[in-house]
Length: 335
Image 1 (spheres, rainbow, N blue to C red):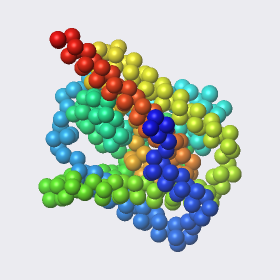
Image 2 (image 1 turned 180 degrees about the vertical axis):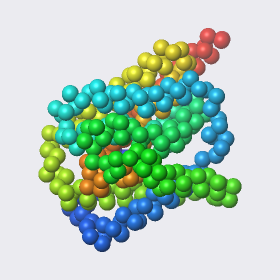
Image 3 (image 1 turned 180 degrees about the horizontal axis):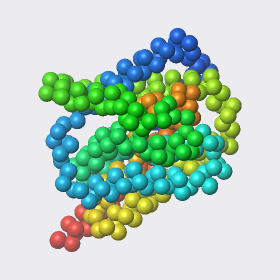
């Protein structure tokens, strides 16, 4: 059982299979155009369903805990980009310029929603605050990430699809936020139906990501992705993702304790402040970057995503065991 925590989940194995398929049979010509259109529709449907699923109560719950939210947002949108830039001398020796651009893009992404909330629940943290922080991070990322891409990624030579951050924000609003808002407004009509059919949302969620990964890697393979990235750079990328995750977990834990948050709030800060969203990041990459560059740019995110799931699963169980031990000690003392 202990070893299973460190094994990739089924979705990660499927991602690897899709990358392999794109490497061997990349989509091109009319087939590529078909998949591009299908991917756009799938992403719009994904954010529509997420909007319909998220209740206003969940958005408002915990919103008054502003100190916690500020720390989470600072970790997500300030700490990570600073780490990516500060570690450039070391990172440049370990990865190719394309992969370093992907690392910077990873650093400017919003936090993930589902896994941050799930791990907070598993670790017995502050759930209302986790729901509020993770959801707000996703929504704010629609505006903040394109600006940070223009400030952090573009100066480093990222192959962006447009030099205007306002244009990028507009396209993200149209492709991601508009379906989300329409879905949320439709919640009174379809909210209960979606809540009872979580498998539908999961299928669309994972299916849209797989479509984007296939189209992105197909374009990248045709442009010679695997000829440009040596095995040593891939190994270096694993090390880079591990270092970034370790620093994020360490700094968020230190700051949570330094500012006097209780254990429940510390758990929320650690799990919300150290996550990066695959579900939001891959669609954003498709909008923000040139099609031939997306494959290499999302590769660091894919590796970081799996790494954060495995490490945080172990960390959440440690927090949960500590909470059980503390409760047991308190009951024993009461006797």
